[in-house]
Amino acid sequence: MTMLEYAKSPLAEDNWMTRTITNTMEGTVTSAHFDVAKEIIGRKCLIGFVDNMDESMKRYAKFFRWDGAGQGHATTHQVKDSEERSTCAQKLAKGGVNRHQYGKIAEGSEIWKLLKKRNKYDILLYQYAKGIYHQQNVVYEEV
Image (cartoon, rainbow, N blue to C red; front, side, top):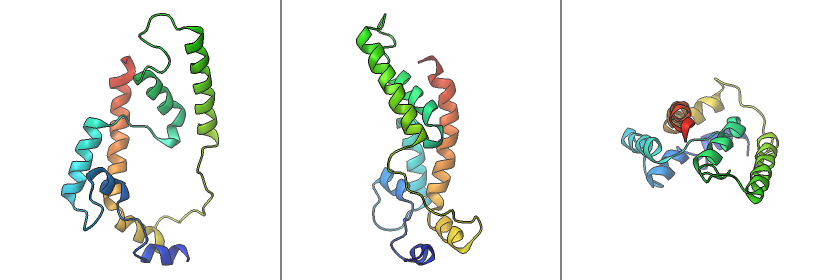
């Protein structure tokens, strides 16, 4: 199956993230579903992005206190765990897991337009999450 055939088929994703967050796996996704998904992301999620993996992992470690922050002096075991997590995060950021090489789809092409139309709420949700990510930089900086 070509990418164009996929984009035209019922197999192509249709706002997967919005559907998952709102538990709407069947039927049509509406702006009301998008609004609920935004509310959930804004109130319940600590945002991270693969393209900012190192920064995201540092944020998670700080927020969840994986590095022993707030517990007084770190023990030797905590320091070792922190170093191992850092090494793991760096490897993940550089090489990743479950990454596959796909050809780029040209912006504005027929395939691009079909997939963009089919996933309009996920695209808007991604843009919203980017904004939340930057807001959280300020909020969680002191955590």
